[in-house]
Amino acid sequence: MQEVTQSPLLPELRTVHGFEPWRDFVRENFPWLEMTDHSRGPFRAQVAAYRQGPKAVTTIRSSATEVTRTMKLADVADEGFIKLFWPMAGSMQIAQDERNTLVTAGEATIFDTARPYSIRLSDDAQFAVLMLPYNACPGWQRISPRLCGAPLADNATAQAALGALLALLRPSANLDYETADNVLSAVTQMLSVSLHRAARPVSGSRRRVQRIELAHRHVLEHIDDPALDVAELAAALHMSRRTLYSMFRSYDLTPGGFIDDIRMERCRQALADPAQEERSIAAIAFENGFRDATSFSRWFKTRTGQSPSDFRRKK
Image (cartoon, helix red, strand yellow):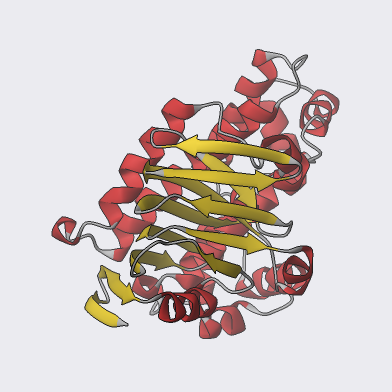
């Protein structure tokens, strides 16, 4: 395995010759996967990756291979992630949740790593991957079975997201961590809304989806306000609390859980961002709507099982 370039501000670019070294690389960086070599000649792969906290953007070009996450491997994984795939050259035969689909360049698909899936790549296939924690898409576990293992319906949004993500992997872009974080946050929010729209029941009203989008935008714009709660959100959307709860029930969410998930995503991003390592935990708490660091620490530990300082230290 040969490292071509590496910089704290630029993505890693690695070229791997031979299937065994590639399999070792995948097991180290993308654990709990089985791999099979289907190449007809010397195996070669190249990967560029940009990571920020629990999120990762990766592009891979490789010889023909098959990647499988079995039920046994899914069960031993520490936690599940959302994985979005964009073929850019060649094709991918994908399978999850009893769906089996051929996805080609110009399309996109999605997986949940907590459930078995398989991907078979054509020779010299090239694709991009975005890995996200569940809380990046509030209500993901509710909508996941409707989406995984099939091409994404909202291809326009998917391709716009791909263009933004590829910018993070261009060394010439010379992006700093703050800019990269802003790009990832914008892409995550855009995809979250798109996935909820694609997964809504056929009978779901467009007005309800628009209100969810407004709720998401309002929470982000007022995330630093300690008074942001269910009552304030209902008032901002000009509806009763009862109507607000009914609206979120369609997505197996509560308004309070929706607000908490967005707060958690922003807090995790800040704590995992190397560019913010000098900032105090109290400052991060204040900008996300907590009145003091103590209440923030209690809330964070209840939701993640570890304190903010422990979470930051392990990243």
